Image 1 (cartoon, rainbow, N blue to C red):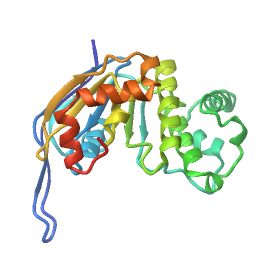
Image 2 (cartoon, one colour):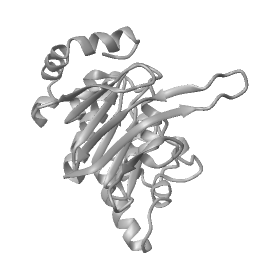
Image 3 (cartoon, rainbow, N blue to C red):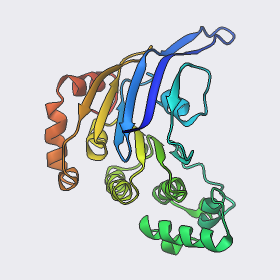
Image 4 (cartoon, rainbow, N blue to C red):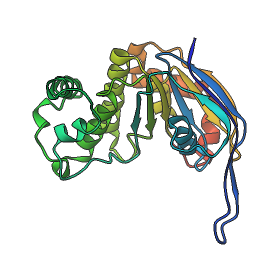
Length: 248
């Protein structure tokens, strides 16, 4: 049974000043099962972030409809960590939590241990490295136990070894918490590593041009050679993304 159903018929941005109207999304229909991870990739500027914002309910100005999990618990990891620099790691997580102080502390301690930041709970966000800040951003999304998790290129601008460690950490968290997940990425290797399925979008007005199952085991996803072998099997889609300047 689908936990998420997306049926977008059209999304346009109106003309502003000298900038003309932009038809960003065409017909984008797909569903995701409970606990499934779906990567969304495609050419630069094709509307991937716009699609996430519509799914999140942040942008309601479109034709179509979205059916989300009934709890309404949505975790969103943006391209930038968006932490409050004058607050500690624990305080940044506490901002998204309800419940008693004791319940909050238990959740914060648990998720910081999972992302390897138990010793950083009282560090101010302004003192964190970029890699640590991104871990906190991921912890903030998971600490609410979301039914729906949205990630918008969460590892962009990280060096290659750090980005790989973050992908493997995300795999562990997804296996432990099992949210329904949409993961936007320009990197096809990243999509193969993380996702159960890959949706490839076309140029604007974007539509889905491929829906690719990724049947790799969790062990294979940790093996860079197995990931690269599967990526090469995607052939035309890898070449399309490479021509558009993305990381195929």
